[in-house]
Image (tube, rainbow, N blue to C red; front, side, top):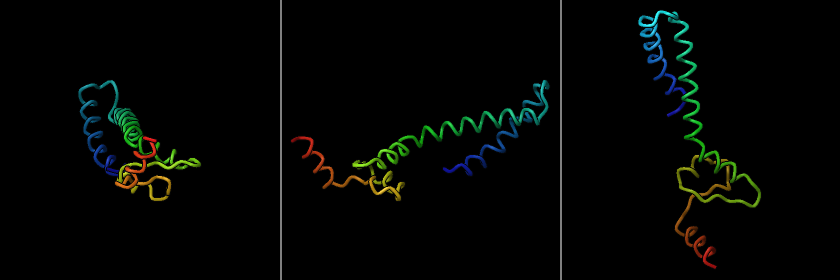
Length: 103
């Protein structure tokens, strides 16, 4: 799910919630409620996406370091096509890693 999809889902929900709050809690008008709810919602989505994408960002960062190769799952490796130091684990690679760690 990308940010455009998230915002397209959130926008009508935010508008509906702002309308409801403006009618039930008349301390603020609908535009103010909309701004408050939008700010909270966008902050929450940003934090959630940052948390979800954290492992991939870590693999990309570590893979970019000198003399370092990250062996990971195929999905993560495919998601970082520009980083040649992030590779998918294959049975041969796994066997070599096990062999190297047992020595």
